[in-house]
Length: 155
Image (tube, rainbow, N blue to C red; front, side):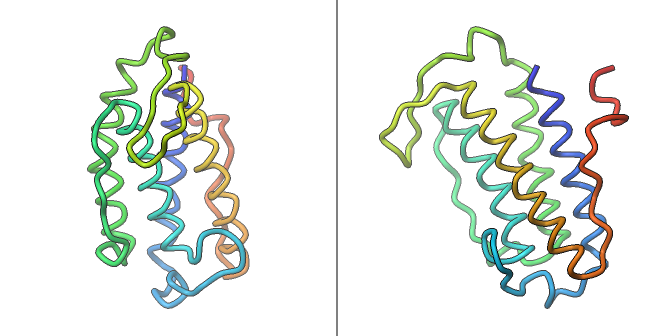
């Protein structure tokens, strides 16, 4: 049951999009200590990594997008939403038999188990959301809740 954890990540991501609309652009693109550069680039990175890995385990080509084309919260949300539909369709077809299937991805020669990749993608986003929380607190912004409970994910 990986779907609820993806839903959790998407709910929290959407909360971040909402919160960060009120943060000045210069703060969103400002280089930060730790993480992957800036608040804006971290969000872009989360979206891109999720999509790339899941397309990769499906044997689909990686779609390269440029960060410079998504330098606003509304544009990042639009990208996230547009890719999410495809990812949801894939996750709905997920079965226990898929867990240990060995795959390779176009950007790496290593082999991976599909289930391991999906769990990596989930943990990857949660990790970066923690970084966003620290940066938000530095800006005086109350972070999005990381609470999994009471989100209606397991009903």
